[in-house]
Length: 326
Image (cartoon, rainbow, N blue to C red; front, top):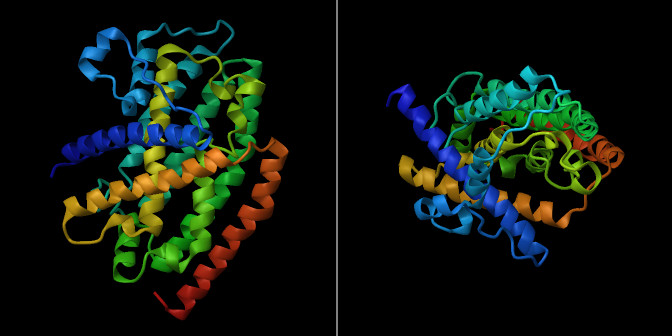
């Protein structure tokens, strides 16, 4: 299969999964709090084409934004304000190519695909910060500062957890890490501490509770997204949809053997999709049940709990590797 065709198929899978997983996060959050969840809201012109199923509400939200006017504040740095959401979206789509969708991927089999994926994920967040900081809104600036304070602490935990698994498998290739689990055990059973830390890091990367401090609506409107509207806000939404899929897929590849249970790609892809729904349900439940941290509480919690746990997982992986268990 050609590179372009693979890329198009994975982009389409990522787009559909992004809509479904975003809906799942909203739905679980609402039902856990005894609310109805997202109601159908779509333009009449689109209803005949798309229908009125609620599972597509995240798609309706983006389409609605594309129909609206994009307002650019006069005091903003226009080039950075406009280009940052575009680059974030492109990087979010690009990040999909480094994960293995049940054995189906573009770059997952490259020697250093794990490092490349981590770089891309960091770059997405940085461009979010650049765009919001350029808006000159006080609410966006506060949200950007909070996001920046959490960025490196959360990234450290995610980085150490990922490299703990790379040490066990003796590879920086995501596809090789998946194959190592097929031959041995899913690494969630070998190093559960790394899995827990990685899962908590995903909450921070996606701005879910208890790490949604940068988007605290009752305090700072929408934080980094306060001044964004119309098509640019729609691009930010889309980039978050794709990033959700990438992070969940990254977790499954590192700790759940990438969903590969047989030599049949189609069966592996189906298993992979089921695992994405399960992992997203766990993230959604934590998001629904946890209160929002203050920024100092979040930073202290990461430093005193997630960092030590990730370091312990790294040491544990080194011990396992030195003993030749895997």
